[in-house]
Image 1 (cartoon, chains in turn brown, purple):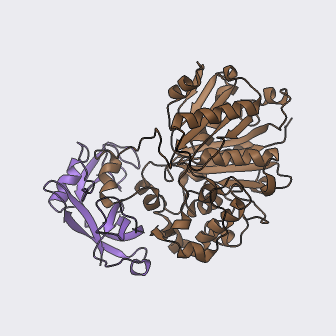
Image 2 (cartoon, rainbow over the protein chains, first blue to last red; image 1 turned 45 degrees about the vertical axis):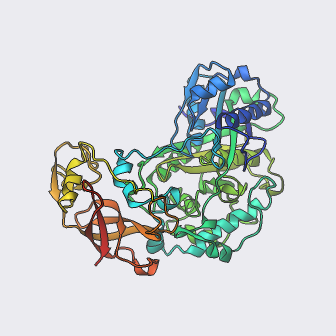
Length: 385
Length: 135
């Protein structure tokens, strides 16, 4: 039994705007995204019988939407949760637990309307064994392994900066992107040091926004007469290595990345050469380098030079983060949903000026937490057998 | 100025914090697979055995990886920029810590795998943190 070609994404939309939305609460962001995705899929609210979300409880989502679903999943392990929830939705639909799955994201990361900022419990492992040493958010912890990656493989600050430059070049083609001014390697290196080796322009944005997906069986999707192509699930993987960055076994490689990627490729029965578009979650400039290496697109240590050679930039041979990424498009906090949205847009041929010509297979990959959880999706617009 | 976050020991971690208070670096070692592990927990991280014992470590190790934080949280304003590091102890386990004793830390002053040793920071009557310095 496989989940390959089990389901298709038939609805995929973001909130009307992303960026600075001080008039929208967290549940409002979820609900507006859900309405937009429902309309996009051409279904009715009451068709939804499975709800999947992260960051808020699926109970709040169902209540706010006014529905009584027969299946729910609240796996919430950070930004890749939405890739994981697509995988879980596929399993649930295949098993008959639900027929029409709604997956939502909404986060008031910038305005923090109706959002809570959880404090670290001083009795928790993190409270005892990390917090006393002055970490201050992901810039001080997610980046912990980069110095060792630099020492082991010769990765440089210029190569890291190239990720920001490449991503900005895509953002300049996206009218919805928050940051659209051109930047150079020097601009990145001259931007304010946040936490060495990360300068300001090595760090993702902090924004408000939401997005949602509607997932149904591939068979149902083919028969719906949609005015846009269904996007089929070819492969999906998920994994978790640790919760705390200090517990990472190899600081230059994510075990979760490797396992999720292997699982997705095994299910999809495709090779790296078949992948024509990638969305690598870019919380910081190093995470796409880890993605490229740990998923086996290049050997360990070749990720930095690959970025410097601009293979992922407009005109490159593997377009990467074409929406402008978390670095320049938007980053609400759990960005993974936006990576999926862009993959779907590309596979539908709806990416406008940044459309990758003839793309048939795309890959979405990212972390949850700080190299804690990980998930990979391989998607296609080809209808299969 | 807001206070820095301090740990509150729990039953399974108390031997570690009791040790630091006496300026002893104590961690658990598994008697079945003969490896140290950290943070403290009832079962071995490597083989899940319950046959573990507390031992005192040398306090020597190497600078495994680190960041230099220029954007301090409340309570750390006077310290910035400061080094948050992962130290690999000579006996094998790793822990998060601060590298202290470097004025204006920069990467050239902090080579990866440089030897380090523990220094004790008595931050309250109850809590002593293990910090490290280059040797």
